[in-house]
Length: 220
Image (cartoon, rainbow, N blue to C red):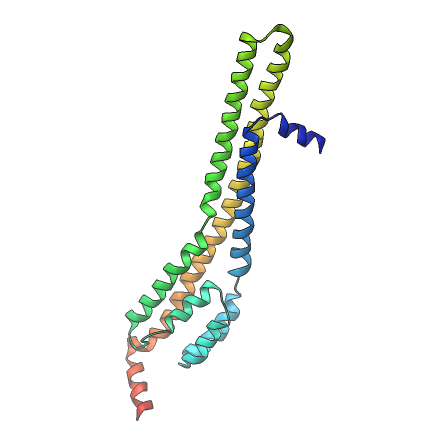
């Protein structure tokens, strides 16, 4: 612990700014991981196993209830297709596309900022390096002989420590960003796949004209 404290203290003022970027990155990673891996997690095969029979039987009220029991984006997109005019495929498509455009920003929010934080941390480390080198050259040029070794050592510590700390923040941020983006892309693909399956089930009879025939039979 003492070595860590000494490492931080010898790094100069830029260490505190890099530490702040680390705190922001940790907050983003925790929030995004919770949202993507827990709040958006859905057993899709089980969900579709319940939903497909209801759609095939045209029991749309039961299908809506099934979708409402799942708060995840996938089920909410499916639910949007069940709202409005089910006799018009364009209405169904518009409702689902509108919902997809609504849920996508929530999935993609803040994750790209991790890459930005990684770049900022690296650049702050570089600034610390420049500051340390300036101190070192200044010591060689102007400091008294008795102080040269101390000032030179301090400048080198600032240069090395800030660079190391900046990279220690940047690398995990890039790894976390890649993992979260990969999971987000998987969820988006899942949403698109399920929305297409639901759309096809809802519009199957519209394409063949059976919807109107069955509606007339029921009305009679």
